[in-house]
Length: 92
Image (cartoon, rainbow, N blue to C red; front, side):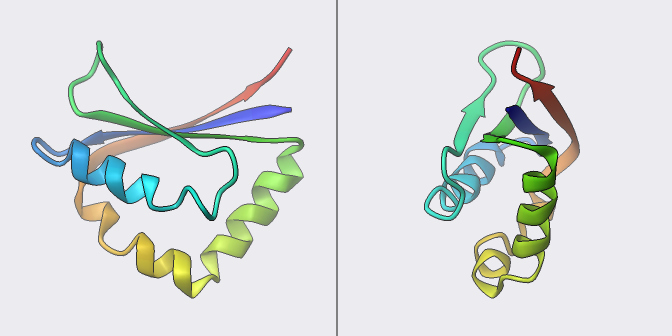
């Protein structure tokens, strides 16, 4: 099993808006958690979920890239953040 963390540093004043946009995906992405950092980088928002295998992540990314509902929910999210990264952690 793997934990996927998409980490973003939001523009000042935009972290709560970015977190809300990610939370709107919760019905489409089972096990989705949206986290905001209490320490560390200001305005950090993390979207975290689990997959059994990396092939599941790739299949999910392909599905969402072609899903009009996902595109509608995520429209404009790139305007809300400055930088981002992805962490893929294997559960030991």
